Amino acid sequence: MSGEVALTCQVGRERMSVTGGSQLAYVLVEARPSAPVTAARMPLNLALVLDHSGSMKGAKLKSVKESVKLVINHMARNDIVSVVIFDDNVRVVVPAQPVVDKELLIAAVDGIKDGGGTAMSLGMSVGLTELRKHAAPTLVNRMIVLTDGVTYGDADRCRRIADDAAASGVGIYPLGIGADWDQDLLDNIGQRSSGVPSEFIRRPEDALGIFQRLFQSAASVSARNSQLTVRLPTGVTPKRAIKVLPIIGEQSQEVLSDRQVALPLGDLERDNPQAVLLELLVEPKPAGAFRIAQAELSYDVPGQASEKLRADAVVTFTTETIQPTDANPTVLNYVEKANAHRLVTKVLDEYKKTGKVTTRLAPNVTRILDPETQRLLDQAAAAGGALSSEDVKTIVNKTRKLTQSF
Image (tube, rainbow, N blue to C red; front, side, top):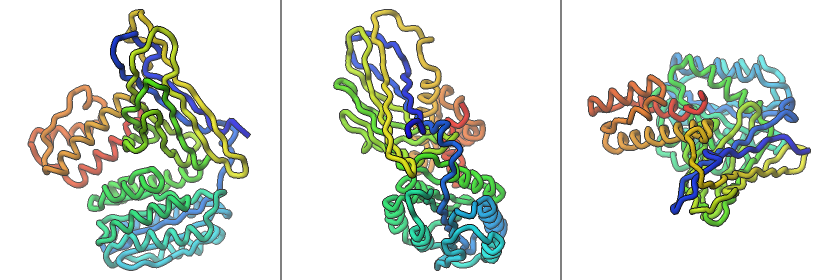
């Protein structure tokens, strides 16, 4: 059955001038699950891997336990759940099993106590073992990893486990609570396995909403193993590829080649489209209509054959005067927000190297940012001073989500 997903291409300008030089063109490619599969709910295979080290004592551990219990209460009898806790050791609190006796599972979670150090790779390794007991293409196989600190000397092992998880069809969704966890590491773990960076739980009371959203995300999966390939004709070169939905993330140059852009999109969720913004360099064209890109999306729906669909990006080159109103406001909005994200990331990279914020962003950039991010960056630049660890995580988290409010 076809039609589970709609694939569309929008160009920044449907008409471009005939010139003697190359021009930049923007193409927005969006994959959106459509009506035929929105009623289906794939069973979940979910591992919750939780830091319970001494620093989690008090409100953090309490809120995390309440969040885990909320997830369990929302799961169905044919879902699979496991709960693994780690400090400088690891213990399976709930072995992977169907969610049949919720009271028993919740009692096991209630019994979690704080204590010890932080060795995240131990929890990730055992969590992956639990997931593999039931992992199947017909299940949504995900691991949620939560920590509040820096893991001790096993960061490389964490990355290798993330790669193993990806190879097994398991997506890892890292969460950092408080201000003292390693954002670069957690981002890398998420990107390697699920394509999704870490989420910042700023305050313990925020955990409940974030866990609920992660559960809803898993429960909304409509198509699996989606892969986007954008083929380019002679005379069109890819310069950048930026994921703009559900969050902003510039893709590495590895996804680009002379005539193609290829990147995995992973799971597609209903009511949560994925979109990629392409920046292309187009060599001079004569007057006429030209296809500057063709997008192809492949994906799997359990119990059905793999599907492929295509969409074209077409531009008409003309000698007529191009008006500002000819621009596509949706595409240009994403361009503005992707550029703002890039410039804020550059400022934060500078801060990580020098310990100072010295760059002031232009008003056309700051107007796109949320008020708190504006204030934090302006204050740091005005004082030539530092940002706290919490400030950095707040700025990163908010700037990634600029495209969630149009």
